[in-house]
Length: 588
Image (cartoon, rainbow, N blue to C red; front, side, top):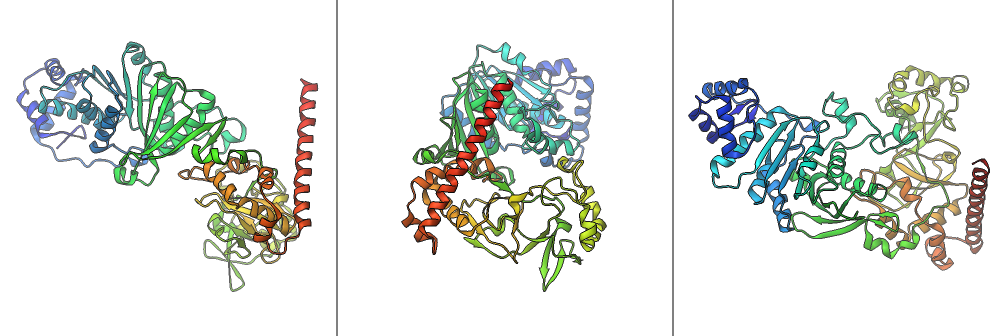
């Protein structure tokens, strides 16, 4: 049966039926004496509605699906497992704080597990869950009358507006446990759903410029709540235990080198989110001790087997995915001499991406496309970068510019068929939401420059878990383009591209990449990661005999020219940096 859209058990129904003549004040006093909840009913009308519902035995109300709001309720088995794990690690809290308590399973598990709890504070924005938590606690004490009874406060409140500092100050000398399962959703997702459960708009991580505009300003709500609670209780003795996405744990530690959160003994216990919540995401229990010297690494375990998987975090101001593996190849952590680029971005795949079937182009709407071939180039995606050498493609794309911001009016004069096709599909360009297209010429694309038209490329997929590099050759006598899920370097000569690919695929290089790449990230390979590869150090550990085994027909002169060009490029880059530094000193 449900009351206030919340589940209510037979024992709780019996309790209310047997006490039907009590006033709201007497009811609240009686309930507080039984289960510790203050102000179970806030108004007489709430009591009347409950009594009416119980008396009339109204039909069961179907429970709404709140998964799109990131609301994945913790099952009791998992909340019990978390609390037992904490107890086994000598956690003995006096104060429990659950900032998004949902249906109350973590509160129930804490009541069942910990013996010294004096106060419990639960906060929940969804009113039916507030009632369900209250009913569940009352049911627990009706069945366990001799259990320890703390003072319990369940607040119907938005977590972003709730003043946790008052709790922190009130219990500053007591052992605190902040525990829970905040929403697994981003701020932009909640905003698109019209949710009011959002923090006040702010630059959460102090991003500036393009980062704030193009996506790094978007953040995980669970991360926001985690940081808010860690900061609020950073001077309290106790522990923090949240179920979050793995990316949240990583991001908090990533900021640790700068922010220095007062947390240590940081542990991550990976869970199977598909089993626990029926959702496909990498998730974990993040544990740490509060009010300690800032820890700089996380020990990652499997929550079911307790097996240590790895330790990751900061080593000498470098953020790494596997500390043990990294220490074996630390000398390869430096700066790459070339600039890694992302491929072309157009956000109009329906009409910009084509297939060639028997010499005829078709777009992703399955429409025949009659255009000139001059602006059509082969296109490779992450899924295409599976071989050592790539010289054919399944997709093609229209390249409207040679550099970002170039005027596109020329297409109308030089390529009328292409212009007619693009203009007739102009709605696809007009509805692109990204701000990068704002104020740019019509038919604009991004991720385009001189580097895009280099005939030979060394490329890697950003969206897959492989770390091997492919050699991309021209396709149909044109340089092949890559999409924005790929990263690449362009070369004028085949031999330079072959040598670079060989060096990047060496065993030592691959071990280093594995040590700094996070396999559970949505995009495992990033530009920042690739720019850390110290190619000079790799060359110093490579001899010509090795190259001959991997590259057919290579000559010693090719190797010497490659090293000389690399040295010259490094010298030119340092000269530019010196000029910039001197200019800054003279103008400061």
